Amino acid sequence: FNVSGQITDAENHSIGFAKVEVEKLKIAVFADENGRYELTLPVGKHMLKCSAIGYFDEWVEIKTTAEKKVVKHIVLKPNEKLLSAVEI
Image (cartoon, rainbow, N blue to C red; front, side, top):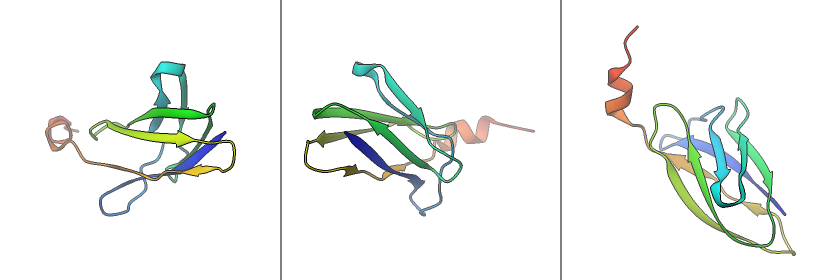
């Protein structure tokens, strides 16, 4: 069943191309440039792992049912240590 949402930071800025995965099922998708993602999962409880460069990974539990589509927005926290290590 469909699970969709948007990935943002705490200031509601979209995080494009973040990875959303359910490791147990070996299912993964990448968000689009606006942070929107969609994946299809079987009915049940699942742990979504969301990751993006410069941010801490976020784990979110969701429950899918046969009756409705699940919308889950995910907020990532910046990893300041990692961001400060990048120099151009």
